[in-house]
Length: 141
Image 1 (tube, rainbow, N blue to C red):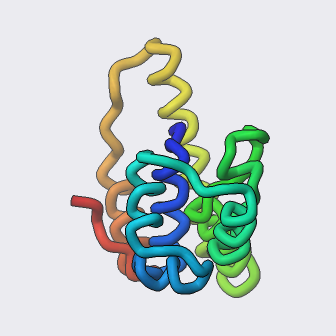
Image 2 (tube, rainbow, N blue to C red; image 1 turned 180 degrees about the horizontal axis):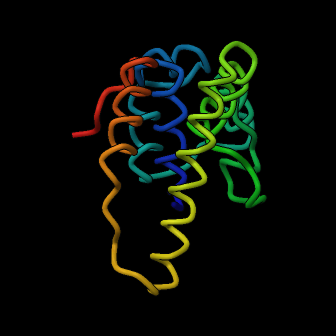
């Protein structure tokens, strides 16, 4: 998913649990400036981009699309969670790997349009529900 410049700032800000006002204070900008950036009305200057990146723990390459291999804050958080699970809950890591591999294969099949969208078997749904409860994950609405 390609996010706009403003969406990347907003996503990173929210992943740090910061309000627009808090972020503005952190980098010495006006509150409405953060709103304008997030709504793609304008962009900050180079110095402010540097402050933004430090405050939000992102790179200028990610923010400016200079390098397609950069991870979003949400992706970084997922990697950190997986590493933590791998270290302290090998069975949890196995469950995550299983689900990730299964969903990846389903996505590949959908992309190739070789099969209709499959439904998960009941035992897979039960395993997912159990994992979601174990890790206190809420269902998306």
